[in-house]
Image (cartoon, rainbow, N blue to C red; front, side, top):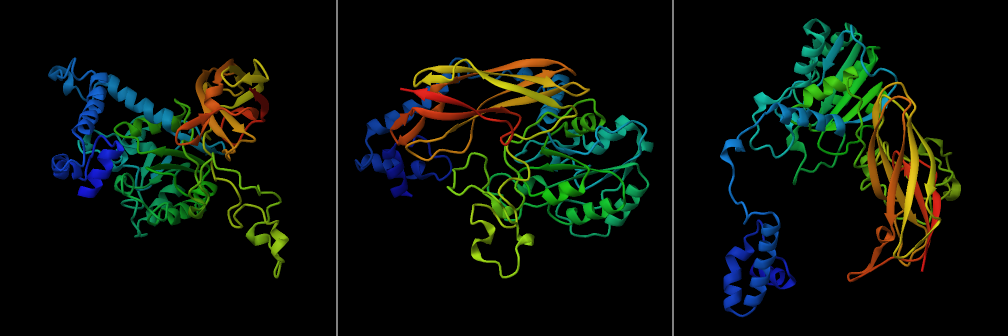
Length: 449
């Protein structure tokens, strides 16, 4: 630890958070002359600069009159809106939004779990304040419209004895809403899983519910990207959310009912299989892009080594995500017009205006997050196949159009060629304006000297 403190201090590390190497050894290192007092002074200055920027020396006190003003109506409304705007609609085969007058079978281990819907690191959680999907849907539709049968007691539950009751509830209902996912403790700092599928018997329960013959809405409440490609195929609609906190239930109820249209976009790619990880949209080009893929079940017996094309893809998973970065549906649809550039060329210190007309082509109001991606086609160092450079969320009424504009500066195309050198290299770039990282048609722009 003393050696670590010495190397860290002289390398410019200002703060030692949890190892206590500085607290235990830095004084001794200064006395031995191995760390200069001027180094300590600079470390302190850097910390104080941040505190000054935060205003802690201008107003270091807490207003106790407002410090405990928890659960204010405006705070709860903001918490609900956070869940609504952060939830991603991955699939909808017409079952959502739920029509009034239908009987709902509400099942799944996360449907009434006040503690785990709050997510990780909630040391001050007052779980009695959390409103669950069961409570909110019951209030919205009435007790007679909700048949509650969790099927599993918690997400890791492998006991299948309760699944039969959930299936009976499904058969007695018009639609099934299964709230699945994982408990808060399964994700977060130092809580990794090698298998990122739904834990316990949740998939088996979903399969049994599907066999009941009723439409199934799957709501996934989790703390990480999960492998739910199979589950998504079983369900008629899928809402994917991260642990939503206190107002998860009301937000879920408003989205299921159609009072709010989901508008979230995936901040990560969801893999088909765990073996695809790490999976990210801005990967480097392999030099052998997937082409003419032949998947494992289509390979002939005693096939020669070159029969699959010898390009870069997984024989059992293909080359892409189950749901890509930036993806998310709505209860309406959006159309993208042509991408227009203020100029087809841009100087190394210049900028170009990018615009695209986006139209709500559906029948209900909704929000779309318009995304700007670029690709450097040739560079001195290999560059990602696509990089997000901007996004804007627009709210549109049915039939309404809006021109979305981005100002793309050449500096946004820069990259590091060494630890101290950042450059904008001239050459040809591709540019997309689209609703996710895999959509849209590129236009080209040239950066000049």
